[in-house]
Image (cartoon, rainbow, N blue to C red):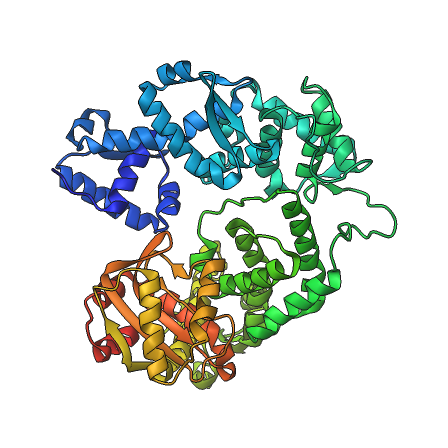
Length: 624
């Protein structure tokens, strides 16, 4: 029998059950890079000695003629993977209780197999306070209409991971909608009719939420809609939509759809005195205090005058949406968490404080959006504080070269400080991070070198930006290595293949940190609280467990390597860096997080690090 690892099995099952899939979707599903997906597919084909998985411009797909090469277990896995949600969706969308025997025939199950399947479905549905029962040979869904809709939306999220960008990709979830383009256009028409607009990044979420609201169930006599929206633009828009869909227009449906619109549609012309800001449902001053405390905790200094009003408005809208169960998923071609480790941690810390203050649960997708807001502000401040010193070599400072200087200053004004040099002998290497020139030169190695054309083409601009990024990364790595030499300790380095679960590893490393006098018994509970908010594993490679309170007695980082993998939430990691920082080293969070992310994203270095068994080798390879 052919053997496949868990990642390879997931790829095969996904392609068998769902058909052609883009590489970026598989990468997001597995939380790895596109390159890793391609490598795993190559290994699958090599294992089978056949081209089972092929690809074209639209994605990867299974060559059906080679399916017989797979072990029988894959057919079972794929059927279960595909049918669980399909059956549940069918039952939820049924206009009346679904006949048990007809469902068994439709999905090719025996009565006993379907009964067992219902038990499986209930284990998933119960978390939404929904239960499926068999009554009078029919399957009945019990639970509030609100919770049924939450369950249905969860099916859509689970099935698609919200990576589709075209509304047509969701047609299969709403078979009762014959023309999905018309329905989407109707929603936009209603919003425009009442002089409101919809930010483009909310469009797909809003369409799906409204379609789900109008698809699931019927109003019960004792059930009321969520939220009080009477007389608001949201209620007027909701009524317009319902009246034009042919559904009986009643207060129940109006309130449901109106709650979906809350915090998303924006009036084009706000009433006098509102300044376009959200309704004051929450304490604006309290939100501002939470933002400032989060930035202070991480020793981040930015210009708050422009950032605070915009960000506070976003949080007010977020709280109003979460109040009505209306969270959004924002599709991106990359993981915010993996690409900006430090920024994401700031966002998690802020969301924990926000959750405690307002008693709301903030989902991971919303944390990612908050990360983007914070990231823009932090990156802008970083460039301002750490300018790159550029020498632009111009032999005679001609009009063309003056043009280049002006264009470069305009393009990178927040990142660089330019000095023009018209004589190579006057070039001060000590004060130069980057030399930009139209003349061929031999760089001396003490600075970055970038030769451009007199036209300053788009390719030139890309090369300049790459050079700037290289300088920033080298600065960050230099700071990281200095921190590593100070906080890493051979007494806190472990190569342990027997420790393979998160909790066991955390207890083990915490004990050794206590033995070294770095932490006390209150430290581990704080670390676990951080993990509960959002696990600290990144890139399917390493974990960075740490406390949200800088309450360590000494700044130390314990390291554990297990090349066989450690189960950490939904991922497996090979490296764990248990971080204990005291109050004096709070500012070290960023160089530590970003430095580790940079080092461990280097695939060649990562392969070598996996085989390291002692501290001296680890430190040598880490830096070189």
